[in-house]
Length: 154
Image (cartoon, rainbow, N blue to C red; front, top):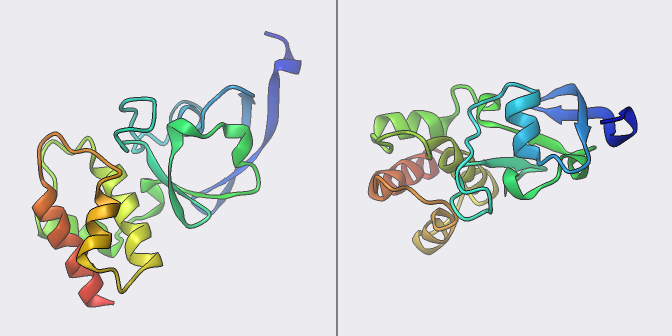
């Protein structure tokens, strides 16, 4: 490939400007994992169904497998590595809201956005938001408890 097939620029990830050298076709998931080495964001289905790759872009949860990296310039991106010691992570631990853990980063990102954007979220809204991600180990009840515990703290 020639240099003209690559884009050089900066992504704002976890509060840091990160230099990237990417192809126009690279997804944000590929850039996060392969170019920036942030492997907490998981590859699952690759088509937006499972939510394992969920990150936060400009405050809203997004599936990084569906976003081109080039579309992410000038946006604020937060990955699971950008949420150290967050209330929702602590709640997931306290409520044992995970089993194998593969889907957990995506669920935590989604739940963090929910509790941040909608601190008065009701049961229906929580269930709606949880439906955007899939857990094959079925920790949904514990996830609901974790989200409720964070909403009660705020």
